[in-house]
Amino acid sequence: MVVRELLYTKEHEWAKLEGDTASVGITDYAQNQLGELTFVELPDVGKQVTRKAELAVVESSKAASDVYSPVTGKVTEVNSELEAKPELINEDCYKAGWICKIKITDTASAKNLMDANQYEEYLKGL
Image: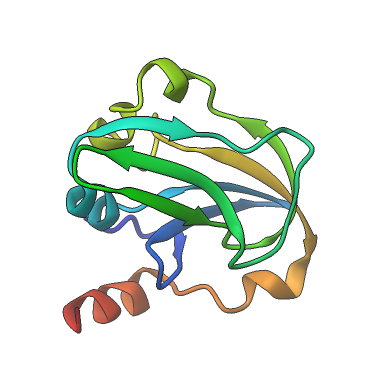
C-alpha cells in the first residue's frame, strides 16, 4: 500500500511534508519485510539529523533495522506511544505508527524524495 500524498525514500521511509516540517515513518513494504515489531528506538527531541543518516532503529523477531532520515533538520517531536506499543507501526504505519517529526533546515534535502508513482515503480524492481 502506497499513500499518494506522501514522499518516499529507497530505504523505505516515508515523509509527509507540511510547511517546514516532515512527519516520518517506515513504509508498509518495510514493516511487512520486518514482521511484527517488538521495539522502537526513537531519536532524541532536539537531535540534528542529515538526510540518509540513522534516525531511529526498529526491531522485530526477524531483524533490527536502521531508519534513515529522509530530510536534513532537527527532531521536534517523537511518537512516544511506540515505546510501549511498537506494533502500531505494523497496524497503521502511515498514521498511528509515525516515528518522529523533523523541522527541515535544508529544503534541498527533500528534493530527492520519490512521489507515490515513483516509489511504486521502484518497488516493482525489488
